[in-house]
Image (cartoon, rainbow over all chains, first blue to last red; front, side, top):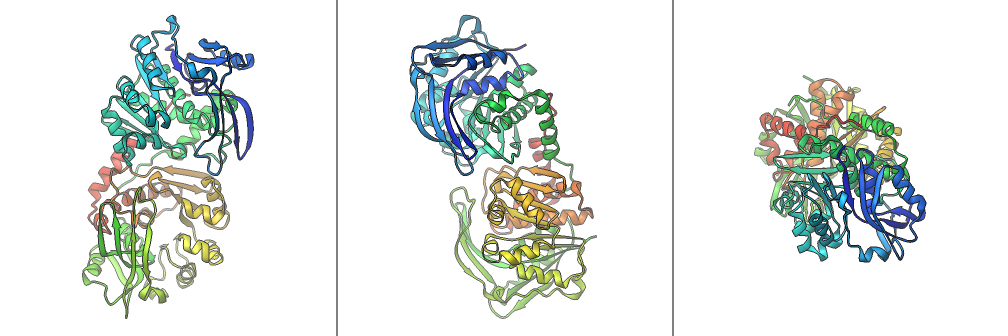
Length: 305
Length: 305
């Protein structure tokens, strides 16, 4: 089956939400997206951790079938993020960021992983994303994620790497910040003009908007009565999506629509538990039953107008 | 065919948006909703206007097949609202409100309109909505709209009238204000416990969420690259919806889903022009073609999970 190569951060998070708190809980963009992708396809993960990285966390990744040979262990501590959410939990408030070993992260793709059919450049410095692209044989499909920080401080590097990917995943704030355009449909079109054939705009609890060549797709977020911890929702979405694409072995409009739906479903579980708890407890059966109820809720009836 | 009776405000609006401005433009909850409903079913409208109400505006309503025998003309000026929108135009900023003849509005339903199969209580004081219910023979289906002002100042009266209707239409802010609950699904359930069998939560550009007995439905808003004037979007949505129900002659889950979709489509046209311009210029052909493209954009694919 097609393998997915994922490059990003591995972190320990200390976070507080209205539903409780956790300390030194497994997190990071590569972690969430790899766990999500592993639901559908084999995954190899490239990142860096410190000597404090728990054996149990490594075992968890391995148990999910994730190839961790690209996960480098370096002297020092694992990337640490401390933050909290309040109110409607749409915004993560950062209390402290300790880059630790991540500060010197320079991803080296192990030679046997250099021909990845599917590549996810999770949220890291755009110059590092470019360096990954330099190291790999042209992948069949490349997806890129980013964040406000890089849009604001590394705009040129970001635009350079955007040219080289097939799909960019941004949230509504990011796409507006990047383009200066309020209308998401217009903003997505602008980003497409810079390179990526397809752009996904994530809208949190309002779902996602996808703009491709000559087509568009809208999807709702699964309505949840309780979001316990939104950390990793976007990474789970992107990971689930590229995992689904890899399993299908296709990246046309139909496959992308399905993959976006699958990614949204996976993310809806992630946010129902702290850290990666709900994501790692997710089974195909629970995914299937949520999909069925989601489909019933959002199927468009035929009308006469 | 089933007639829809609509009781609400008729106004002249002066408004400014990033795309221009209009003065003394036809507006009001009864106006928008009647014009929208008239696309699908015969409509009778009850409201009050001043002596300044233009003959051309009356002719417009009549030309759309609206029965205006319940539109009372009184000495004084028509309800006047002055406001503006800026930025993402999600909020209407009021500059001035002159109630004028609307201040003494006490809706009297003409005797031949007292057995309405479908009744829409557009946004007016909840005591007046109750008075309308007192005057009519039990309608087959009653829909109620309201606003922040009544939720804050007339909560008891509003809860009393809510008990007597089949469907309540609220926006996300209103339903949170009314229930004190952040989760829209939970808040809608709370409102249902107070009487209405079905509750629709409008989310503006993010679509709508519908909660019925044992079912839920989500729909997107039609994505628009340019919203010229959001005034009347909610009224057009509700009007189009009840008009569609009246035409179907059914109010079960399937009919409600279809009606919500139809209402959303109509509202998407309303906001593309100032005042009622785009709404009154709307043809069945344009509605049909937008529906087709909307369906393509939001149809849920079958996935294997």
